[in-house]
Every structure is written in C-alpha cells, then in structure tokens.
Length: 215
Image 1 (cartoon, rainbow, N blue to C red):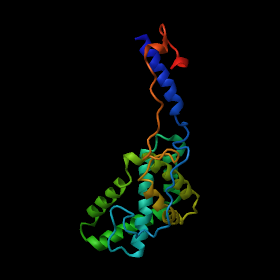
Image 2 (image 1 turned 90 degrees about the vertical axis):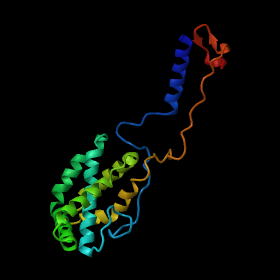
Image 3 (image 1 turned 30 degrees about the horizontal axis):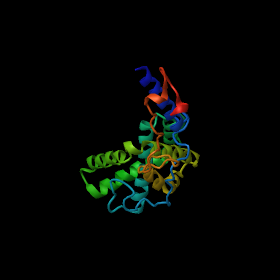
Image 4 (image 1 turned 60 degrees about the horizontal axis):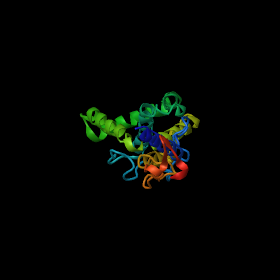
C-alpha cells in the first residue's frame, strides 16, 4: 500500500507540471478569436428567434435589445470571474444608455402591436424569453463571458445614444463566442497529452521508497 501511495504521489506531481492551473484573474491565457463583420441585425441566423417582416426601425430595436439580453445573461452567469465585473458593468450600461434602451424596448412593442394585434404582449414576452435563452450555452460559458466582458467595456465607452454602434460592431462576435470555449493554445479538438504512467515493477523500488532514477 505504501508503494502504491508513493507511486500516486509521483503521478500527481507529474500531472501538476503538465496541466498547470490557470491564474485566478483570467479565464484564458490567449482567448479564442470570435470577431466578425459588423451587422445590421437582419442577417439570417444571427438572432434567435428571427424577426420577420421587420422594418429598419424594428431591426435596430431588436439589435439593441439582443445586446442588452446577452449582457444580462452575462451578468447572471459570469460571476465566477469577478474581474470581468459583469454585474457592475451591466448596471452601469443600463444607466448610461437608459434612453436608447427604452427606445429599443418601445420599438419592439410597436413591432409586435403592428404585426400581432391583440395578443402582442404575450407574443413579445415569449419572443424575448427565447432571446435570453439563446445566450445560455453551458459548453461555451467561458468564451461567452470573455466576449461579453470586452463588449460591455466597449458599450460603456460609447457616448449616450451610440449603444447601437457597439451592437452593430460586436454582436457577430457575441454570437460566435457561443460556439467554442477552448483556450487558443489548447484547441478543444486536440486532446492535452498526458505523461506516461509510472512503472511499478520491483526494480523501481528500494524497500518502500520509489526510485525514479531506475525507472
């Protein structure tokens, strides 16, 4: 038993060298690249659900509200990474860009009143709930949180009335971040190589001590 414990201790030491724990202040050494081209908000497949028969004002309102929704999800789901300040930045965006966000919400209301009729409120509630859910991806949480943190800082740097510019420039990146989660130095499709297991035959031992020099 003492030999087995000593062998496991050696294996743990080797694995500790091979798979170093990331620093607590970051979630990637080199983040994946998710940047994309600017969008208008009408691109097929960009948003879930898809807005149908939207006019330019509707599309812009939907674009801005998708940005808000994604940052709201980040505020809820990215608190494991304190230095991202996801909650503080989200609350600051709500204050700094309050007028533009209110206009976007009113724009969505106008769209659903025009296209749905009497059931517009229930339909809009279903629509926005699905919108929020589209930004929840367990397997890509790290890459999403990384992108959302950077995009939130971009949004805060914009003057009032220009939140839509951040949405146009960065929503493709936000959507792309929901796909991959691996550090750029260790792509998810390439397994991390592990060191070979230690030998445990008799020639590797001197009494109860493991002799790594002989094995």
